Amino acid sequence: MLEDRTTAASSPTAWPAAYPQGYAVVDVETTGLARDDRIISAAVYRLDARGEVEDHWYTLVNPERDPGPVWIHGLTSEMLRGAPLFRDIAEEFASRLQDRVLVAHNAVFDWQMIAREYARAKREAPVRQRLCTIALSKELGLPLPNHKLESLAAHFGVVQQRAHHALDDARVLAEAFRPSLAAAATGGVRLPLLECRPLTEWTDSPVPRQSGGYGGYRPSSWRPSRKRPACPYPNPGRYEDGKPLKQGMRIAFSGDTSVERELLEDRAVEAGLHVATSLSRLTSLLVTNDPDSGTSKVVKAKQYGTPVVDEAAFGQLLRDVEPADG
Image 1 (cartoon, rainbow, N blue to C red):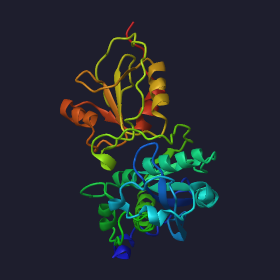
Image 2 (image 1 turned 135 degrees about the vertical axis):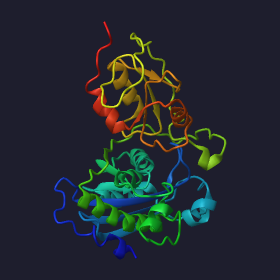
Image 3 (image 1 turned 30 degrees about the vertical axis):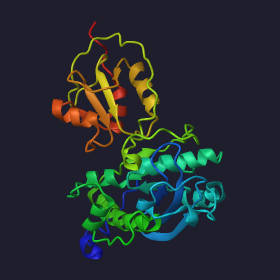
Image 4 (image 1 turned 90 degrees about the horizontal axis):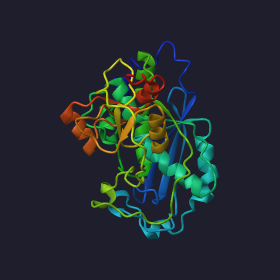
């Protein structure tokens, strides 16, 4: 079934020269979603430039703490007790990632978990770019009912055998990524590649959980708010598509970003923009990489008709911010 759906797109006459030369399709299972949580299993499928599987690798990892939601990933303390520590598999893991684009479903999460584990091991993951298959499915305009991996798999006729098992999730994603990549190449679609910067902010101390446990944590919720000087420019109103940003505009952020949030906010302030911690009818623009999420800011943006752009587009807009009216 997979072959039938992708025959037309599997052999583009000219593969885009700008596309990466190799990919590492990754899935990690973790003890939770917070910055103190740990990886408990990891899998990597290495693919060539056209998305064909070269090999795969899987390992359990001893998190040196409780395994978290066993009812989700099925890995108990007993199963993990004799597993290697992350520092013991760091070199092998790195060799699987070296010189490749990291591909994952909701890639910002997998990247941050991997980057923090390498930071704890006093090392740096050899990853410079990542590609989120959620973002790629949007670029391709795939008619998916939602952004779950199971929906992407079903679209391409890929059968999932063990959901939330790192090796099977990585296999499913690799099989769905190959036709996605071929379709992108055939259609001349720009791959949604994002830069991966090493993380230096991590902790081994427990972070208080929000209500809802494992699923209720918001990755950005732990960031401390910082007092900033008041924006000296009046709010000129909402951002209009196709026009530049203007000093004084109120900018809100929602969700995770490839560039550290504080750095992105600092750049906005330096450009003369007002960084808002909440969203209201006065907000000029919402910046989010996941406009379909159910965060309060995204919901309010839809209610108020607030313009929304992703991080990449915002970065471009920051290059040419119009001065405030004299």
